[in-house]
Image (cartoon, rainbow, N blue to C red; front, side, top):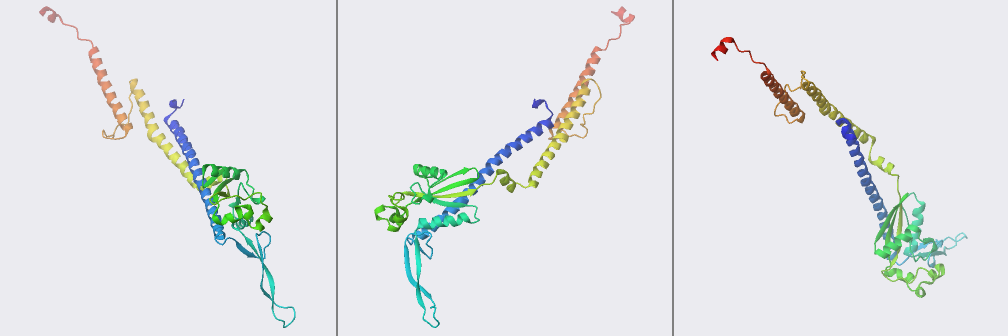
Length: 325
């Protein structure tokens, strides 16, 4: 059992157990701090996406030039001036096409640009009543949508293997209802592009969907090594060695010497308790133990002398003493 081991061994075991306990506490603290940092990054991404959507929403929709890959509304304008092929001929006007994009479409295209970029944080827009099949929610997003609706939450997140997933709840604004309210009243280009089965019948204030952010996570060892340097681990080892040798030479060795001296005294042998020069007012417990043992030895020696004196035989009586009696 541990209690039968030497004090130095017990100290080493207790020190290691304490260090292990601190290590577990450090793990949970670092894990919490790391995930809070990742969540903060995800919140910043969602803030930027939300701000971008609000910027588009204040104009209803934005128009871009000569980009017909994805749009909601087309407006050709004769406003580009080009030079005529004949020398000296006057300049002519050529058609310039403009294509409109609403907030949701602009945010989706923004997410596609970010997905192809070097940014480690990615995002997408999704809803359980999605209009575009590209925006169909995955397993996490389905859980997030169900949770934010049921519990009326503004955000939801999970730490999954390899990533932190974060969802920011989006609510339909008045500017959104023109495209996502009554399907009969929706713009014709929206109905032509996406049909009328999904993405409609919302009211102002309804949960429109979520901004889904994905931030990759690192293995805990990599995170820990980014916080703890090798020299810090070396300092812990040095602290252990200093404490161990202190216990070994300042506590254990004096006790061993005092034990050996006391054992010698118990069998009547001479022994040096090392009390010479020790002060009665010393606060050191080992000094007080040595002084107390010295006092005990002195008391035992005095008691032994008294016993020997009492056991010493008396001198026999002389003849004259007998006659007198």
